[in-house]
Each structure stands twice: as C-alpha cells, then as structure tokens.
Length: 572
Image 1: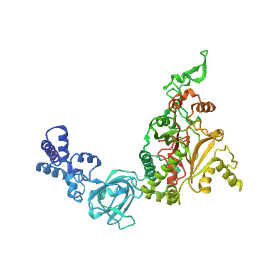
Image 2: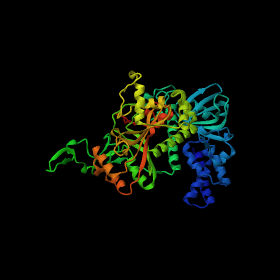
Image 3: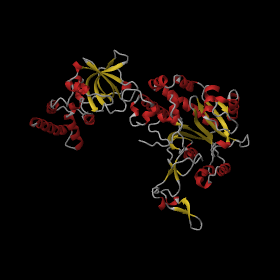
Image 4: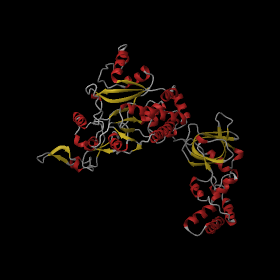
C-alpha cells in the first residue's frame, strides 16, 4: 500500500510539472496536465474515465510524465486491461473510438462497442457474446478467443447474463458465420450487472400486451426498438420536408382555454384542491348566491383551462403572418376509448398555409407522405424487413406504392355511392351496413375504399357540414350543405390525415360558432384574424402515431409510442 501511495504521489507531482509545461499554473492548464499523466489508464477502463482522457489531446512530451504514467499503469491489472491489444495511436491518445453496430465495417483499428448482452455461448476455446447497442436490429457478435484475452476478461465472461451492459474492445473483422461482420474481442468489461433469475425479458418471445406492463424495459426488445428507430426517422424526415419547403416551425401551447374540435372531450387543468371539495370556490349568481358550479376565477388561470386537442388555432395565427408554418407536438383527448386506434396522449403534425385552398392542402399532404415514407424505406431497411417478416407480409410493397403511386381523390358523395353499391351485395359482411349522406364513415368503410375500391391512398373530400368542425369553410356551390374538408385514407389503417380550407369570412364563422354552442367572445383573438387582413388559408393534421403504425405494419397504436396513455392507464 505504501508503494502504491508513493506512485500516486509521483504522478500528482508530475501532473503539476506538466501543467507548467503546457502553459502555466492556471486551472485549465492544470486539468490538461493532470489528464495527460493519466492518459494511458483510459484504455479499456470505466466509461467515467473517457471524458478525462479527452482532455489529454494536447500532447505532453515530458519524459518524467511518461515514466510516471507507465509506473501508474502497472498498478493492478484492473486499471489497464489487455493494453497490448491497442494500437500505438490508441495508447498515445488514451482514447478508444466507440462505434455503433449500425455503422461497423472491417478495420485494423481497435474500437469499443458498448451495449447490452442478448446471448452468451461459451465453448472450450472461445465465447460468443451477442451485443446490441440499440442502433440496429441485429447488433454484433463478439468473438472472444480465450488465448487472446487476459484473466480479468475471462472472469468477466463467466459472469455474463442476458441484459447486462458491457464494453467490449477489439477489431471489426469479416465474419465466418451468417453475419457480415463481427468483433474479434481482446477485452470485455461488465458495466452494469443484470440478475439472470429476475430479469423479466428472458431470451424468448413475449406478447405485446405483456411488454406494455414493462414499458421501461420493452425498448430492449426487437419490435419496440425497431418501432423507435422508424419513429425517429419519420419525425426527422417530417421536419426536413417542411424546412426544405420553407415552412416555419411553431410551438403552440399545450394549455388552452379553447376547444378546437368543439367536441368537449378535453382534460381539465386546475390547481384547485379537488381533494377538499367543501372548500372549492363556488360561482355566484346575480343575487350573490352560490351555484353548483366552481368559480374558476379563483383558479390559476382565472378561467377554465384544458390540455389542447390541437395546435391548429394557434398555428393559424402564425400562418396569417408568416405564410406557411407547421406544428409538431403532443395533443390530448379525454375520449373513453379502448380501441387499437386511439390514445389519450398523442402527437399531431399540423401545417397551416396562407393563400391556400383545399387542393393546396391535399397536394402538400401527398408530397409530405411520399417524402417521409421514402426516407424511411431508404434508412430503415433492416427494421422494415423485420416488420414485413413478422407483422405485415406485404409491407414494403405497400410503402413502395405510397411513394410511387398517385393518391386517388373522390368526393364524399361518390364514396357513399360506391359503399352503398358494395354493401348491397351482402350486408351481413358489414358491421355498419347503413350508409347514407351524413354518415360518419367507420374504419371498415375507410379501409374498403383504400384497400379494395382504389387499392391506394385516397383523399375523400367535401364532407357534410353536420359531421365536421366549426372552422371548416362552407361550400357555396351546394348551399353550405358540405364543407371544404378532406380525409386521407390509407390501406391497413383508414383515416391518417384530416384537413380543410379554413373559414375566412368573419360573419359566417361567427354564425358557425353559435351553431356549435361556442361563445365567440372566447375566440375573440381567432376572430381577429378575420377582422384584420383575412386571407384564404388551409391546413391539415396528421396523427403521428397512426403514421408509425402504418409504416411499421403494426395494428395497435399503443406500440407506436414510448409510454401509451389510455383510459385506466398512466403508468410510468
């Protein structure tokens, strides 16, 4: 122990001299010099050393520094593991390059792969360790020949279990097995242990329903990890599309006093003490007597407030000043639905375009989907192949059709006529056989139009006024019986996009608000857009999780988001 303390003292003294060599006794120079003295210890040591070793990039040539460093590196085999396997440049800099398994190619460079163990197979002369770092579906196989590793690495391999995190060092080489490449390992260190007996994600197939109870661990499974990667590419490509088109990204508020859809299915936001009902401030009538209603003037926002169901109304304010904008963020709906298509918390992509009509919105939506799906086909081939094998056999062909086949367009009246003709052949095949003008199309109707009638994505436009929101522009040609609205229906899902030309005429909009039992005074700011320089404008909303379901070929929307929120479930 005395000898070790002397060695450490020698290193510290050398570090002080190094600080003077680097450029003085200041704090930053001291950090560089001290890190330089320790740089060789960064080779295959804990990840906490890496940031320190990065400070060591300025070269320090003092011979005393090198001597002290070499002395320190000999203190215990735990400090430097198989240092001879590193290249000269690795030892010189003290930094090993970390590579992601999605990007590996054969090389003579010694690299580090960090991830989680999927499987371990030990034979007489070597061990096979499958490591996945989340960057790809397949991960990488690490081959650890026992004659090329030290005793410490051998001991670590004996402790490996599924789920533990590791740092493996070696060279990427061409594989002699099924995979294209593998890591020829020279050192392995367990970063975080994982109890083999208690780990709930053992090496077997688990149902998606079971995995929802383990939402904190399910990203380690093939399906949910692949969904996350596809989702990431979709989100990035949506931003790229709108940015390339000159749209401005706007973040609209999550807390609102406005009901965009007029449906009333909103989560209330309040700081009032609901656990003490007797002390809630009660509203008073004209005579000063308490009523049954709560006095929200005493609440945080001094009025009823809710979580938003849409960013559209806020988006319109910026479109009427900036031209073309889009929002992309969370929205909420207190709809008591347990279907595979609905969530209480979800994300919406909502562009708004000034000086635009419904045709402009349909054109933009088609271009956006073709772009984003095309980017996903380009960047997520391995994951989409996986989904095509286990979830949707014709997935890639379906996505290719989105990119290469023009979207069909049909009026609502014609869509109803087509459905009536088809249902008449055998009404017993339909859950909802009664279809007429004014019917809000069910999923089975939407899917038949997209999958059977047109065999492509299809826009249905000019819906009845009675089933659409107040802000949609009335069509003048049919006496206001329909509105200038559209839904995009896609095979396998049904409705994916909903949009409209917005009502820009002040008097008409006020009347529509009153018909929907909305107080125009609550929307004074929205009406101001029609008072001051009103313009025709249009937009649409894309349910992002539905897009993820469609592109991945999965049926339940609860697998399309990290932590699904639905009635009775707000875990994690």
